[in-house]
Figure (cartoon, rainbow, N blue to C red):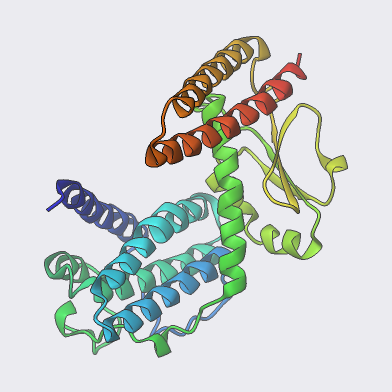
Length: 322
């Protein structure tokens, strides 16, 4: 048995607890879960996205239970809770609870409840004790509320018809944009500073879809503001521009955010170190005939070249601020 797997799943149990505590904290005393899974009201694009991913998880569990591929079931459960519900959705709804309208908060509470209640029933066969403990802490929904999660009906795909390929695709693009923005923050050490972000999106349809996620983009990117424009004329001076896709370019405003004299030496030192590492890798490739070693060195060389090109873009953007 790989002890790393045991450690990771222990950490996953902690993640289930932590996310549940966040949900429980934000379900106020007057909260009443909606009857069944019929939602009323207008839900945000982010709400509808997590419901789409919930539907996908239930469908994946159903298909793989039928073929006894239990490792695929646990993978779907792990993927949803860790990478979609906790890392994305919970982060996106925090600003709603801080400053959103009451109707928006009520909608989020219903979505949170249904996601958690469904998930506890879904993981019950694999984590019976944890799921039972948390299930007992949930507000009851209706008079026929099961006395235990182990006798509750397992989620069925026909009850979760919220799958949306368009929402899933738009969120994937949004997460890629947020990743690039966070990479800039990390590289320039903007841990205590939030910079405005501008996204140039030349495709009108894609721009409209992404605009529905604007607040989530701002939250996940940790930006002070996030705006979408149709061309580069809408980009202010003093920006670091990164091409995210054929139709999207992210501009992170650095003017009046960073000190060029402070960051330039650090970036140039970083470039020199990467170039030195690349030289050593290239030397290693020239001195070995082992195909496996060569393959690994080629991959490392490609990564280093990409990092060097990225640093050059950063250096040029910071130099233009002087």
